[in-house]
Image 1 (cartoon, helix red, strand yellow):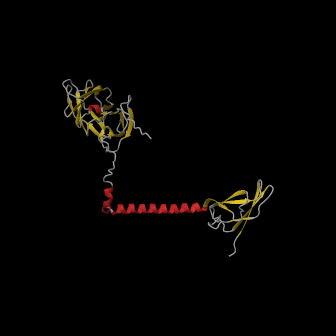
Image 2 (cartoon, one colour):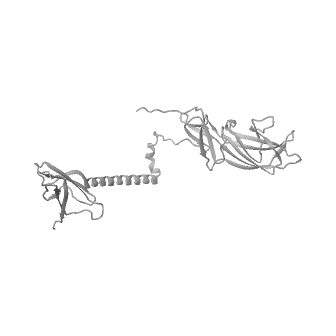
Image 3 (cartoon, one colour):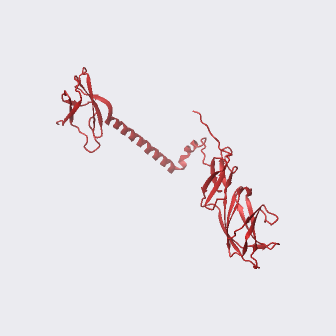
Length: 329
């Protein structure tokens, strides 16, 4: 047999994976109130977010309270410094500040640490001292795959989709392997067979575990013994060997098989002597007894096949006569 392993990588279209976020995912909610004015008359709001590791995305939901700003606004982002209108790492424009969703892709978050944001907008005409607050809900998302060669979680070839939310993380990858999302991921469990058997010598340090394992194994072997005995008993009950009748003549040329099966109901078996007589189209047999000295016949749930021989051909069997009588004690 030839085993082939195919590696799926560098596909032309990204493969989409959707994960449900764990309750422990980093989800922050804050009210942004700090403001400052620029030389151009813009009102700017500032806040910061900490990235737990590199190559993660920020998913920010802004909800404005008592809007006194224009619809068109700009958000600036900078790493480990306060962004300015002429000094920033990322700039994006938004056009609906009433309920704005802002997605910062993981390609822009290359390092772990603090990322500072500045939201700037022109106040509505006629408002001299605007007092606008924002409610911000932010979440962080990361897409990782397990690299079997380096035994580490890697991110290359995977990115976070902008359709991710605080409930789900959507990953886009150009290869197939073991995947994980969010930050609280651990490597798949592995077994070190060089040391796993050594731990059985230390079972005395935890007697409850040892006792539980011993009891389970004992019950398992007892059930195996009982099942084997039940199988052997069933083989005796359902005898597959054909039992020749004692009164058969070795010179007989015609043979007939008679199978008798007893039911599973209570008192379905019998200890009586059982006799049978075959009636053919032209002839019939004498009364023959169905018996065997090696096994007990006609117990409940049993099946036995007998061989009856005759010197003459009976033609088509028209009737089978049977009779039984109990032995006297």
